[in-house]
Length: 175
Image (tube, rainbow, N blue to C red; front, side, top):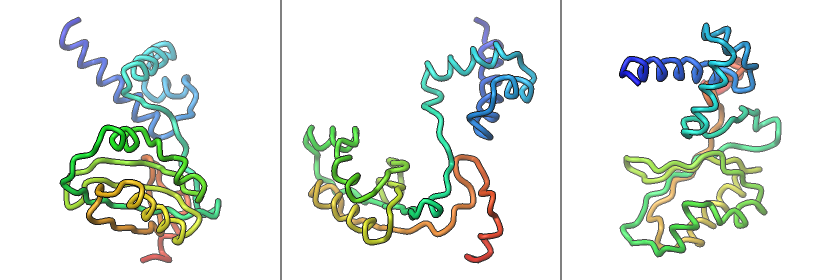
């Protein structure tokens, strides 16, 4: 395969990804039309991107407030301690799900980051009390893992997963 065809495939996949970001449940024929491709080309590219894990999955953007949930960010500053194999497995595979599920916490995303903190967890909880319990559970469940934890509440989401909040007028309440 020539270099130019590899570049062309990547460019085509980026066009398809842009359409999927707008609406991941859009019909293949509409994605094809918006990209100027055939349905077969779009399907083949999507399947290839899934196979190569360029696409991990598909999701929705939901209004957590209408579900009586609140969104939080938890920042963790790691200690310099080495972790044993079991702790690493628990952290990397989220095997401690049995700890946070009973208190109504849903982990939306989890990221290793570079900066003043080392890890960020974005999660949903019924209220601030349960969010604080979750941060305390992490601190207790993995002693020696964190030397600083910072819990913040997200009060308004303007954009999530590339999608603008349809209720932009609510933003005025927070400005």
